[in-house]
Image 1: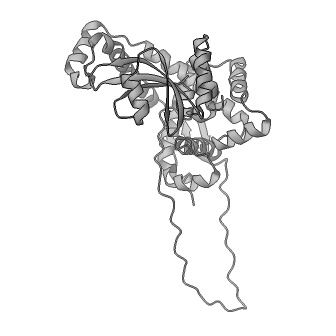
Image 2 (image 1 turned 135 degrees about the vertical axis):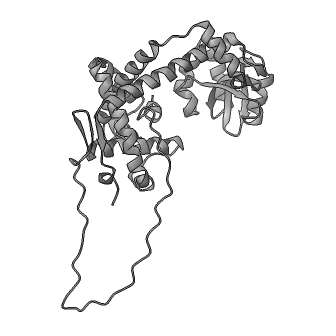
Image 3 (image 1 turned 90 degrees about the horizontal axis):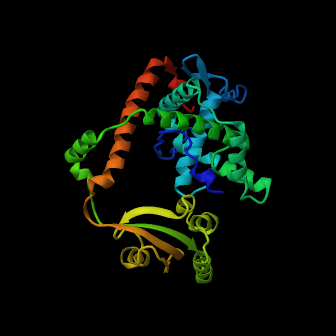
Length: 337
């Protein structure tokens, strides 16, 4: 799917704050120079991509590697606004480069730990993922254009990121599974944090957004004939965020959606296909369930509590492992001149 390029997480846990575009510096006052002694032209040499900007254990990180990661992270922020990435946006994030280096060093440390622990992704699986990403594009030129719009210099760069994510993801999942918590611990956490488990009324909905009523009616007929909702959403929905999730919007409170969609979500039948129109087009939607306002039952909260406790414990363990690695960074070497 095309949206795999837009939703692919680029750096685990990395956050890149959007910065204010650089304001042009005021022009320097004009000076008079005798014609016989013209002022020499000055140029700033391009930074050497082989420059070492950090070290993690025995590995070095070069400026070229950092620039590629920074480009991807900047593209992720821009894409989240629904905007294709262009190189010109990098100037808007220039001030974030030194701070981003800290996160990048940590990410590389986690990647190193994951590989040392023996985690890997088979080449055949990477080939399959790359083909899935490419499948919806009619030509190589269209695919290349989409890669550039999401910050990738090439298909090889996408493949490398898929490999990194697979290795790190498996490693982190393995750590989290080491930590389990009994009913007594879960119950205690629930009692102490009851406020966290109090919610407003919610509707949980999946939808397919299409431009016309005729398309919506066709989809309704297809669903009645046994078609897979998630597959249709992935192929046809004009909502890129939910299309990548098979149309699933998750759960939301009343008043958070546009009026017609909100009404269908909170007053329409549960488990039945509905069609409603909004300013965005026609929605084919199904309310999968509704949650009443009030305290979430312990039976429902328990899996979430166990996951949170395991995540917290895994994070502390990971922090300890990262701290054992010798790392150093040189933020002055990534500062844009």
